[in-house]
Image (tube, rainbow, N blue to C red; front, side):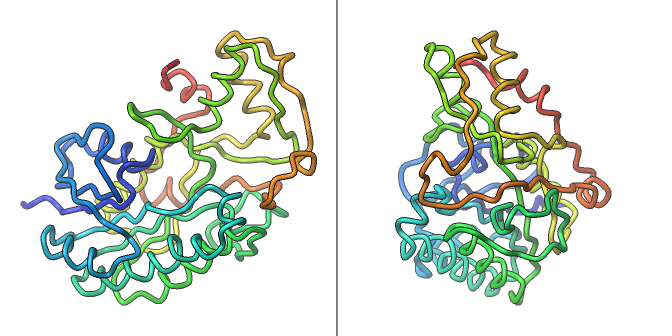
Length: 296
């Protein structure tokens, strides 16, 4: 039996790299990104793809003929999105429309990566059927893209996630665990919010969830996050305890003291029971993730 052919957008990011590592030969992979390849392709093909270019999609899809497309490429820096809404619209909404059109032409199963930031954070943890009410330009862009996906004339899945953490060699951007470890190891004081609650998600668990969706051809909406829900402050305190760092360097603050351009939802987190039941999704605990993310 021939392996399914899976194309990944945003393959140079943390999720993209984690998908390549998690695949373990299950699928024939094509990794795509805007520029030079970063990290280990793990045997995947690599092609340059500008997700805003229908011509690029046509070229790459004609060459690779994907059965499944995991569309992870996006502008995810929440404050940058707030300050550059036109660019956010282009990279998160228009690019998704172009991806949908390409999937429709070849009948590929589209797996779209979305976020807890489509919710207002008033009533977390959230199940899949909860109504979107974004507070930020970024959240609105992902909610708008979800609506396009729901109207697609191809098999589709929306995989929402929360606060992705992890490490792969050559990582181009940091995340909260790496940031906290770095600052605390240098003896720096850090300000951490105590009024935002999340379900931190290991990038390898998210990747595995996406691959399970592809394997099972599961459609609809799935929430893929870690199993533990905690405040950002509690998260960083656990990072400090795990690394043996001085927790008195952590200053508890409220979100409104940070002066960030974009508003964050206060309490999100996910109910992942649907993914556990339908997919066999079994994410690692936050304590386990701290054990496996290397100190760098």
